[in-house]
Amino acid sequence: RLGVTGDARISRKADSFAVLPEVQPLVTPYELRLEVPGRPDLVARGTVRRSQWDGLVFPWQRDPIADLEGWRGDASRFGVPFRRFGLLLPFGEKGPSDGLLGPLRRQSGIPADRFGLIASTELDFPAGRWKLIVRSDDGVRVLMDGVVVLEDWSIHAPREQIHEFTVDRLRRIPVEVEYFEQTGFATLDVDFAWVGPLDDADPDPDPAATDG
Image (cartoon, rainbow, N blue to C red):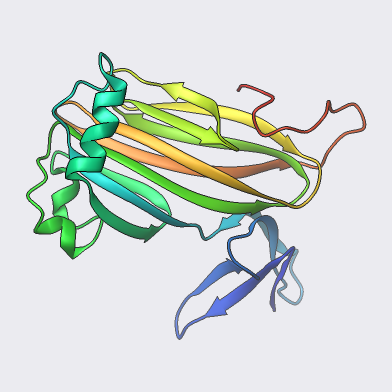
């Protein structure tokens, strides 16, 4: 028998299944338990989320490091809109026109180098301790509740950055991501993971309070 705890449900198909949040856009921890008669239970724990992101992808002319406002202006002038679930974007050497952001981007002529992306979503976080995990090549900036909580706004090889934060009650938190690619390999992965329940000693919860 297969069961799941937390604010999650099991979506079954003929030969597979998926763990989904009960409601969207909830981010929630879960425990998946497989009961086999005569054997110890098999248990897996994780975080389930299904976030819808809306954004713009665009070729940039203004340097994002030297002229940030000009770069943002390029997004307004040249941006092609997209909508997708999750922000896992292994562009590789192909850039956004390879279909990762939908068929419209495949026809948009956005180059594999010197492109940018600005995306936003809103997510419901239950009370607890959480971490934001971002892997990027090149520059990335993440805002939560309008505050910059993670920034690696530079040209670099793929690397991971983590920001830990706490939430005192079920809250809907707006999240915004800015990202740019210079040349070569490109990737962007934005995710959230459950750390644990609040401790009595935790400071006042604030999604921008703690850097990882």
